[in-house]
Structure formats: structure tokens, C-alpha cells
Image (cartoon, rainbow, N blue to C red; front, side, top):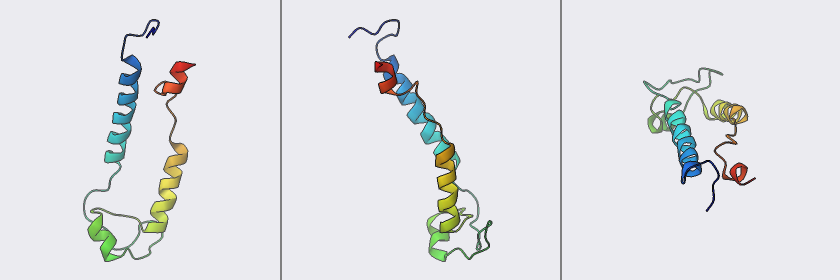
Length: 88
């Protein structure tokens, strides 16, 4: 397959690097330390099952859901790593 100036496999390497970066970013965002008994944003009690399941949890489920939605809205889309953009 003719790729122009890019060497063979360069597109896949970029995609792999983007995925690796996203996984590393997600791992860095995982909570650590002791779990809180009450949500640090709204003060609602965090159920014991949630505290045991997620070490270091700091938010109740509704606040965590709102936080996750806000993070998704801020996440950028890497057009350089997209195969579709390479084919155009």
C-alpha cells in the first residue's frame, strides 16, 4: 500500500500511542488512599459497599456521574490518530 512520506505502520503506531495515553490518563485519575465516609462535594453518605469496592472513593454516585460527564465533555478527539483522517 502506498503511504506517501509515512513509513509502513506509522498510522497504527499513532493510534496505539493515543490508546496508551488514554489508558494511562484513566489510571492516573483513579482514586487512591482511604475512602471517605461522606461525599466531598455534597456531603451525602457514601455507602459502605461503594467504599469497599473502590478504594479511595471520594464522591457519591450522583456526584461521580456528574464529574464523569464533565470530563467527557472536556476530552479532546485526536484527529491525527484517527484512521479516518489519514484516509482523507
